[in-house]
Length: 239
Length: 239
DNA sequence: CGGCACGTTGAAGGGCTTCAAGCTCTGTGG
DNA sequence: CCACAGAGCTTGAAGCCCTTCAACGTGCCG
View 1 (cartoon, rainbow over the protein chains, first blue to last red):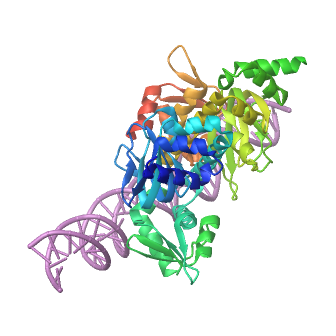
View 2 (view 1 turned 60 degrees about the vertical axis):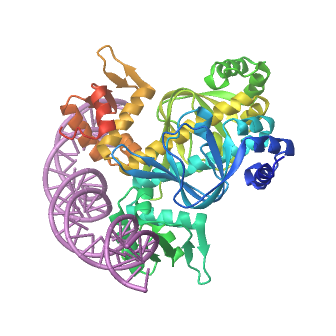
């Protein structure tokens, strides 16, 4: 067995999703899979591409973006370590319904279309875990639908910052949280169905209130608690 | 075997989801399941209830509603025949994250928590089908996120009418489509993240334009094509 | 036939978008 | 090394879409 295949096996074995997969199945999976390292800004796959592959995100962050007919982009979901990307479309044989864009340097394992399915057939606990993953994904999507339906823009922006903090936040000695990815106003806007101008105004307000410290494509949350208050409760409208 | 258990077996066998399930597994599933008939307005389960059961919708329509802290309701999803309801929360053991409300007289099969899981373990094709179902559910949710993010209220209302037409629409001889469920302005509002007043004004406009005919809790789509145009394209703003 | 839920319509106002202009930072090539 | 181009950000002003509040119809059911 080649050295790179050995690497793939090790990676698969170390993934949470495959934690108790019997060694023969690990080997089987490894045959049709390979490791890819991606750096910030790269694109894993484009909307409309035929979906023959799916990916397990080992480290880093990747977001799913849908391009609309009139040129606007909408961020559908953001993934962190141990998320599966593109599995469901690969199962159905549809083309990818969105573009996967790398937010911070990432490592993924790419699987051939039917490999994981064979593994699930032979190892039931894997299927449970995949179903659970889909379940929590669906749950998140439902949450966002509710938020987009009834919450104000400010509240939604606060929420996405809180959410990002839990996914890629780096706690500093002074209690503040640094978000370890390039994140422009535009990015935040298309995560929340708003415009970059509104995001800019909101962040400026929070900066004056000492809640965040933001600069060009990076944000540090100075007062996580107050941000959570805005996200949950709505009423900190006295900036 | 009791007569009612025989009924359950027949129902399970006739469901698309279980189309090729071996008879022994059908029997096994039947043991822990029973048929429930529900009429419009009834509630299948409430948000916060412990989730011990999940349901296969045989006929009718059911919607998932989330109640927010400040008293607003948001319709997260609408289900038609052959949809599974509550499976994922039942798998995780969480309480139901939403309320399931019957929109038109429905028949469901109620399953005990682990029954389908055993069946999936023993019959792999069932697991594929469940995963596919989840996939299309997730896909729908993503579509709604995009719509709520970038589309106008009018467009979203048009879309939900089109979608409802395909789920519970009854085609009339003259080409119009009657929506076979009780549907108030309030209902349409909480499906689209808007208010009943806005829905009322929109429908009044469409009525004057001859696109729909709406009355107390019922809607008939007179010109499906024009409604699709509004949903897709945005620009029929000259009512 | 009275009550009540559902629906309509108007008016006021606010949150957010849109358009526009100028600023600031970053990286790159001469 | 520095200047310059361009991407990212800020700020202002205008206005529209939609919400909110409010009052009044209207149809259905007991």
